[in-house]
Image 1 (tube, protein in one colour):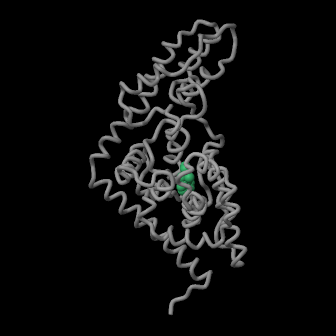
Image 2 (cartoon, helix red, strand yellow; image 1 turned 135 degrees about the vertical axis):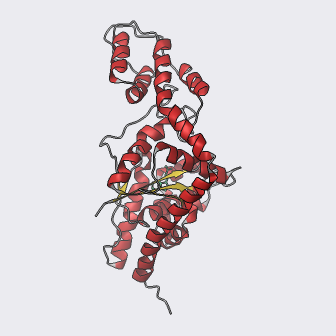
Image 3 (tube, protein in one colour; image 1 turned 180 degrees about the vertical axis):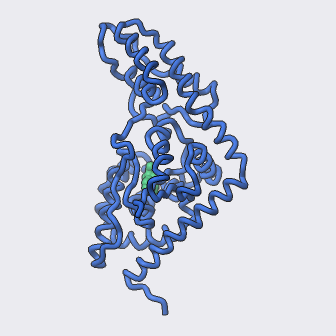
Length: 330
Ligand code: TRP
């Protein structure tokens, strides 16, 4: 039997190169080998964005972008979280076995308390419970997410294990974080610091037009140039090379690394080349995003199919869970 892989993305912004190279490109390969569930976590987005101007539009954008990257709604199950009410019921049940103390101690909760002191809602506290429900509702084994989600996966394992122990049955598999390629690649942003992220404001979006991408890349942070021959590039230049590593040909990368090592590099040329090679990746995706976004009939079909498949699997789990806990029909 194929193992089950599941991943969710919050509907709070556009997908960027970091999402693509860090995760989605691998999802496209995984969907053939595994039983894959990919979903838009629109309930989760309410913990930080309770009144988005256009919630539906945001969900639609992420869906269109997922599809444009090559997620195949027939091979994988691609759905919207709020279309699957079974998740909410499992979340309710799992809340009975989650302890306030352990939830208060998670780093992401403490982080959010600091970031939004005026809106420390219970949804933030129980975020890991909902995420656990997302995962175990399809009895997923593998969750391909970045390092920042490790603690949430650890909580999901704990909730699964606790359920099994409490009811004396090996029902839920303990999910684990998973990297398809073996090593998690970190895609840096253009500001010379950490990773590319939508909240960091340093991202190249898949839907960006040509002019925007050239402008973003040309204004990426650099330094005043190498001072010694054969010196290894450090941030921020190392970041540009890391980006180049994923979008450019090995020859191109070697060429610019050589120039750097000989102190002959002109950052303007490097950036021009980088922009060119990023565009080769993103422009075809952008074209598809535009096409799919305009095709409401197709999106509707995809979402219906996804909801149907997701609810079938979720419904089965929930019937079994009710039975295990002891809820019976009269
Ligand atoms: N917490 C994840 C994030 O912020 C999104 C998410 C919600 C998720 N439910 C999930 C990821 C289940 C993997 C599995 O990126």
